[in-house]
Length: 184
Image (cartoon, rainbow, N blue to C red; front, side):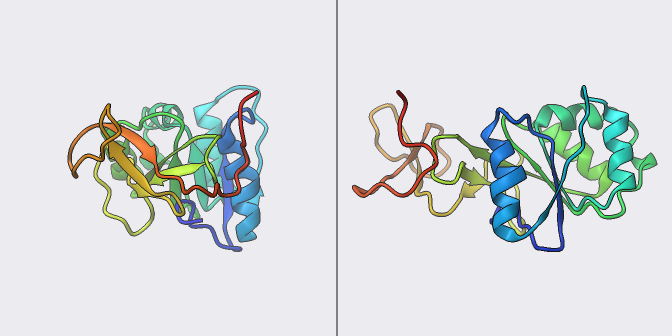
């Protein structure tokens, strides 16, 4: 809810492959919980011009795609395209280069909000850059509710702000509802 920032008047286009949890979150659960329309466009293969023309032709307000797609799209002169309704751009699944984020912003005027999650986590999302938040390029943002995210060292000790380590999620003894309970 916080990362996608969807409303019932939005139209969400999530270009994720259906094998990713991001497809379930971005094409079904996230929009469904917010009463948002989902845009679906069948493309036999990734075609940057078709994507850019689709964003110009249809009233998509929110776009979610992997950073690789944004890397390819910024190779085209985006100033030649008029995305009349696009107002919110999301990405996840792999790291987004700060350079791509800057190119997208300079060519479209839109910020890309990166999220990090996993199939095994409560709502799929662990942390994200959310609308209204000052984005530090290369950062995964802040913990997404209800996750209590900490950065820990190799011994499991919580590190102070600014130190590099591993992402850890503090879990209570009572495990919350999740899509994923265990591996078999």
